[in-house]
Length: 457
Image (cartoon, rainbow, N blue to C red; front, top):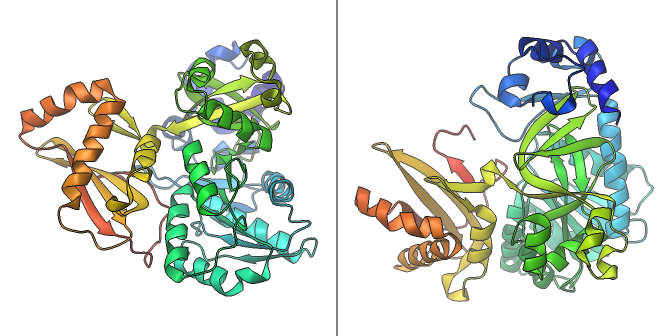
C-alpha cells in the first residue's frame, strides 16, 4: 500500500475524514506518525454513515451489516461493497482446500454462528452455501446458527455419510458442542471433526485439548484454527500450518516466547493479509485498509504486535521452525474486552479459561463461564458464573471460589497484594462464584465472557 497516496485519496474523496483532519488542524501531508488515530467514538459515530464512505455515497453498497459489539450510542453499522466480500470468499475457499482438503474429501460444514445483521455469521454462511451450490466440491452446508443442539443432531444423523465434518463457530462454543456430542451418544470418528473459529482468543493449550478430545494427533494444526479480522476491518490475518507450528514452539519454550513477543504465554500468530497495513501503537494493533468505509490508522483495540521472518533470524530458532514462515506476521493476545480489570489489575480471561479446563473431574466443569461486573453501593463486584455438565452439588461453589481466588493470586502479585485488603475494607468477598447446569436451548447471542452490568449486550 502506498500510504502517502492512499491518505491523500481518502482526504480528497471522503467527507468525514476531511472534516476529521481539518478539525484537528492536521495537514494531509503531515508526517505519517503525526496523523491522529481514528476510533469508533471520535470518528465512526461522529459522522453520518454516507460521509464515511468513498465519495460520500452508498452507491457501491450491496450489504449493510453490524459489528458484533455495541456502543452506548447503539449498533455500529458497516456498509460493504462487492469487492470487500469477493476477497473473503476466495480466502475462505482457499483455506478450506488447504486446511481440510475439501477438493478431495466429502465434507459436511456446520455454520454455528450468530446471524441477523452481524457480518461475521451471515458472511460465512453465505460463503459456505455459495461453495456448496457451485458444484465444484463434494460438500454439504447446514446453518444451525447458535442452536448447537440441532447442529449435534445433524451430525448424529448425517455425519456418517461424510469423510469429515467442519464446525464453523466461536471458540467458546467448542466445549459446548463436545458436551452435547457426549450427551447425544453420537459415534465420533477419531480425527473426523474439525473447527474453524472466529471472534475470540484461544490458547495453544486449548488447541491441544481439542486435538485430544476429537482424536487428532497432538500437533494437528487444523483441529481448530482461526483467522483474525472483524466487521470493522474485514480480513487482517489468518493462521497457516507454519504459523501454528511456530506458536506451538513458543508455547513449549516460554523463555523464547517472552524474548520474542514479551509474553510468557504464546499469543495467536497469523500470516498478515497483503491487503492491509498494520502498526502497533501503545500495544494495540492499528489498521489502514481500503474498503467502502476506508480506514486510516484505525485503532482496533486489539492487543498484539508484529513479527517478521527476517527479524527472527537473529533468535537462532531451529531451521524447521523458520521454514515456510510468511515474512509478515501479526500476533494477537486479546483485547480490552477479554480481560477482567479488577481494580486496576488486568486478569486475562484466557488464563482463567485454561485454569478451569485443567481442574480435576470432581469439579464437573462444563467448559463454559461468564463474568459479570456489578455495582452495589458504589462497589464493583465480580460474579463468575461457571456452567457444569450436571446439576451443581452442594458445597462445590465455595470450593470453586477458593480455587479461583488462589489461582488469580498465583498469577498476579499485584492481585495477591490487593485482594484481601480490598475485601477486608468492604467486609465481603469481591469475587463471587455461582454454579449452573448448562442449558443449550436458548442461545440467541454470540457468547461473551466478560459482561459489564451497564453493557448493551
